[in-house]
Amino acid sequence: MSRTPIIAGNWKLHMNPEQTTEFVDAVKDKLPDPSKVESLICAPAVDLDALRKAAKGSNLHIGAENCYFEDEGAYTGETSPKVLKEMGMDYVIIGHSERRGYFHETDEDINKKAKAIFANGLKPIICCGESLETREANKQEDWVVGQIKAALDGLTAEQVSNLVIAYEPIWAIGTGKTASSDQAEEMCKTIRETVKDLYNEETAENVRIQYGGSVKPANVKELMSKPDIDGGLVGGASLKPESYLELVNYQD
Ligand SMILES: O=C(CO)COP(=O)(O)O
Image 1 (spheres, protein in one colour):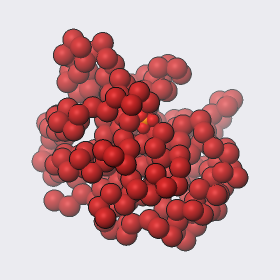
Image 2 (cartoon, rainbow, N blue to C red):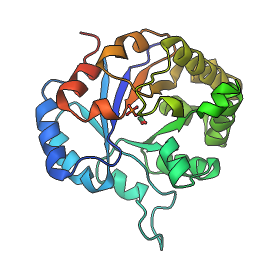
Image 3 (cartoon, protein in one colour):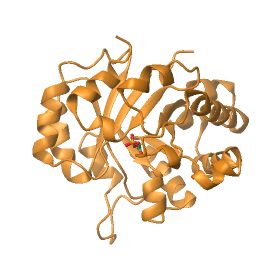
Image 4 (cartoon, rainbow, N blue to C red):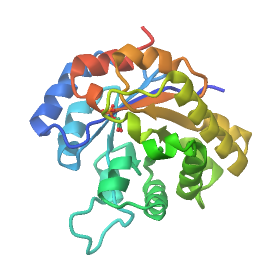
């Protein structure tokens, strides 16, 4: 088993093209060897052209924060996965709790998006995670297993081997309240077992699972030491070059 760790910044609704170029110029020569850690930035759609240009020739992987499940048509305001591929993106985040919550994205939408992303030769980062209410009722496992089953419905074992799942408990996002490394590991392990039940052992060993929710330089090492945590999906702490570099270089 050799899963390459993947540390991804999710910039959410921050940064403009100029700031994007400045950020990438500041980090691109200081990234880890991509065979040791994959460094990724997922940026707002309006910054992706700047991201691609600035990251060209570097070890920085690039991605979008969302896309639609159709390649083209009368869908005002949406982002085409086909064009994201043409623009040189590697990954697309789907199913983030902010998209589920504020923009009413359903499990069915997320599943359609995953299929459209694969159809265009991109890789999805599929987010899942429970609310505080669900955690307090001790129903987080059922909740997250349900989200994973719905998101992966109809995907092949090969596709699942190549995608990334991000476990992001909603109560830990942007709150400074990180899940403990044991809580994070427990759920990432449950997700891997779910993939094993749905597919097979090999697929479960291949799929990379990130933890997200107040990941920062001070806790990244501890989280990454857990056997089922293969990466981080980082919001706030990915916005400054110094902090991002500390995260991706956590092995140093
Ligand atoms: O939602 C997140 C990443 O997708 C986590 O955000 P924070 O790292 O700001 O808590």
